[in-house]
Amino acid sequence: MNLQGLLKTIAGLALVLSMSACGFALRGAVSFPFQSIYVGLPDNSALGGELKRHLRANGKTEVSSEATQADVVLDVLGETRDKTILSLNSQGRVREFNLIYNLKFRVRDKAGREVLTPTTISLKRNLSFKENEVLAKEAEEALLYRDMQSEIVQQIMRRLALIRMDQAANNTNKTSDNNG
Image 1 (cartoon, rainbow, N blue to C red):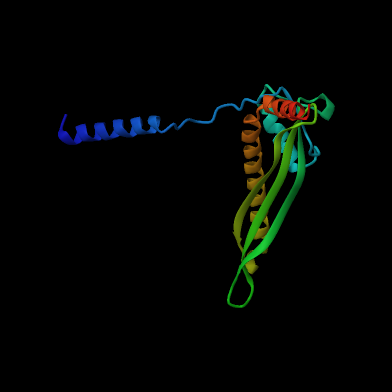
Image 2 (cartoon, rainbow, N blue to C red):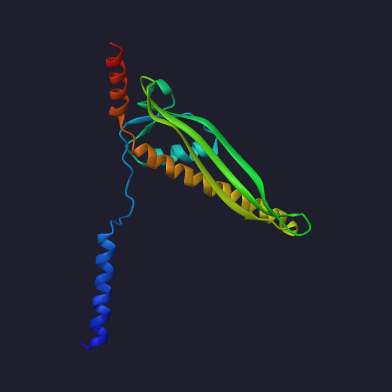
């Protein structure tokens, strides 16, 4: 083996070792600390449908049709989509828009105690605009909103996986201990 081949082998080995040492790992299946959840979004809602599909895909979590039958309830406190002008051209016509998608939600347990306090997820995307491509830009805008919706669903899934069910009970016990 020549010197150049040896250096390539060492560099490759160093790269593999550095990747394994950095903590990089593919995301596996999400594990939730509850068996059932009620999602406070209508079935005909695009966000609600996608979130319920992802929760069911887990295989271990049941999406309840009644809030009273679920271990936890995800309440959507607000969902907004905004479109603001980001920049204008020299003639004063719109050149870019800023698309904003906000979702505010909380999670409660069976007893009504918050296990996840009100949380807001806010995403932004820029959309260039050309007057002669209006239909294409409308389709691009819809695609960007769908992309943001999918990202919000992924963020909700990660936050649901981090919920600590015992924390809500402990907070309630501490409150009642202080009062008595």
